[in-house]
Length: 128
Image (cartoon, rainbow, N blue to C red; front, side, top):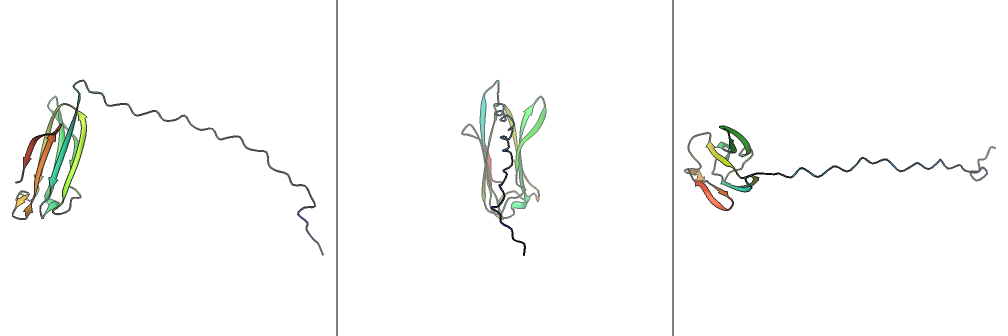
């Protein structure tokens, strides 16, 4: 009968491994710098009973071009208040709200409305 005695032979430990080489830490994001300062744009959209029809965009107007910097509406549910805050350079903006069916967001199928504030001051609002 063969027997195995694990303590009969000395054990050999493998050579210790060196510490892993870690990559250098990532640098902090470049801060947003604006020659004209910063603005906070707050957008509130209360959907009506057909939220699927509602969409909006916020564009930065620069040299005659409109660059969309925020948008919403694709996944909105009926009769819910949605709020979005956009922090960007102080410049000229264009807010566009659309009801694809064309019957507006108020009042036949619910009490939808929108409000846009720039630095806390209401600059646009409506309900149809």
